[in-house]
Amino acid sequence: MTRVLHLEPLTAEAFAPFGDVVEPPAAGERLSLAGSLQGLDGAVQPRLSFNNAAPWSLPLTATKMERHNRTSQCFVPMDVSRWVVMVAPDKGGRPDPAKLRAFLVRGDQAVNYRLGTWHHPLRPLDQPGRFAVLMWTTGDRANDEEWSDLPEEIAIEEP
Image 1: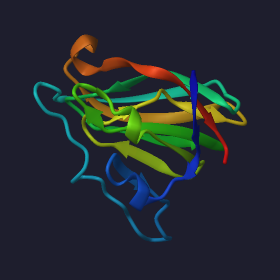
Image 2: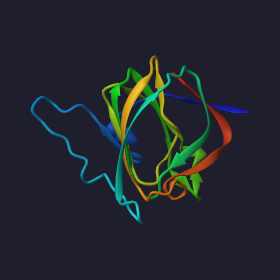
Image 3: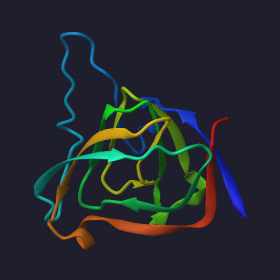
Image 4: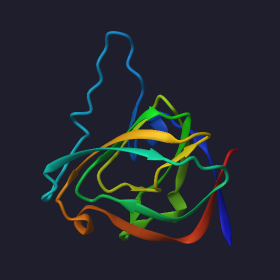
């Protein structure tokens, strides 16, 4: 059976349990995530990567999620229309299906996932999406990311 999850607009308050929402700073202002960016337990090498993700259409189907227990992970859109973020807190080493949330993210908003936050892979809508991604690495992918199957298929839809 497929469970339906409706997209919510991304706000700092709604996303706070999972990380930071980075809004564009006002002219002449600067925003720093120094207090939120972290690498622990051997994840000491910063990794800044750039990707160009293929566009997706709604509804999206989610069957797996990933997390990084040693690092925060920041996604900064460089050329994106809209994109989808699905997150969940941890429950016993897996995403908590009762607390899944899906957000519709504007192209001028960045997100920084808190260390250990379960999240669905990147999904831009409408057009390909170019992103810069900042995280830390141990140099061993098996130690840097963890995957979990969801107990049921999730359909992510607009309200």
